[in-house]
Length: 392
Image 1 (tube, rainbow, N blue to C red):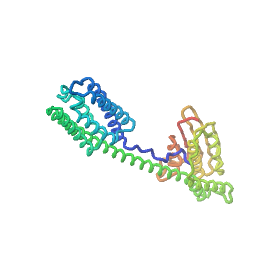
Image 2: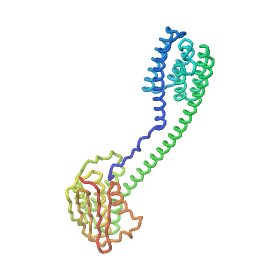
Image 3: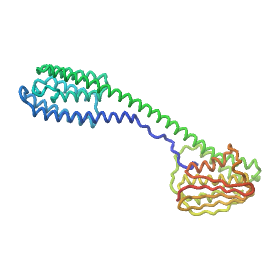
Image 4: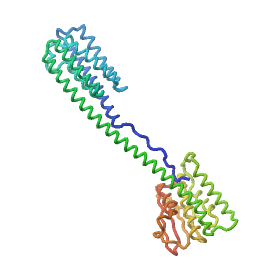
């Protein structure tokens, strides 16, 4: 049984976070620009309406442009800027540019300061920021051409050339800036996606290694431990306890193939779990000193299995020894101690390939955020201290 519930599903991936942020910026700013320019243009248009401006054409034209600006901003902020919305904005602006002789007073046309000039600039900038270059550049050229035609028809070729040049510069600069930003953002998203892929692969590999370690710990503490005892001659013939131990080992093997749901991790009595450990080792005399204590189920599993592994080592390596299983707790930690009066050993001399203490005890405790300490010396018995920094 696993010591703690291991997360087996990799963390969810984020799709193009940089591109999403850029899209949000290139949606919000154009919407606000269109709304601001549309409302300011409406005020200026109605304020300056000296002849030959035709009020019969100006008033419905301003009303239509204002309504379009409001709808454009609302649509963009709610649903994003679509190609159809960009095309509609370019078309509305192009028509307004062609109507310059009827919508703009000659006195305010020069100097590129008319409300139509501002409207055309906003449309050109928005188109470059919200559409790909293969569509936005022709759109900018269309607005430029219609503005030049409208200003020329109004009798001001100087304004036609001057603001047409301004619109061309705005088209080129905004298109280059948007293209560079999209490429850099795309590169950042590709790097981020590769990082996420590597993180997921590492997560899966780590989960696989942890599952393998859990299985190896369970096999070491059950089947391999039983076979070791048989090989050492520690099992008497026709032993009922040995038959029960083999049955328990078989249940462990079956459980290793079970892919059912992970059990809950609610609080359970650790002392009750530990009290049943000596029943799995009837050949060992164990003195129990267990204080009442509750811990999460996964923690209880890990501590119980670690204690069982420690007592199994006593059976295998110190037959005939007496052992004590002690549980204490305070405001800082839960502590389980397994002691025996056997011959002891030198912990620094244990070969690194030996699996028992390294994984069955230290590995299990590390998996739940705890630690295991082993104190022993030849002729002085052994103390294994299991500590988990929490209270039940």
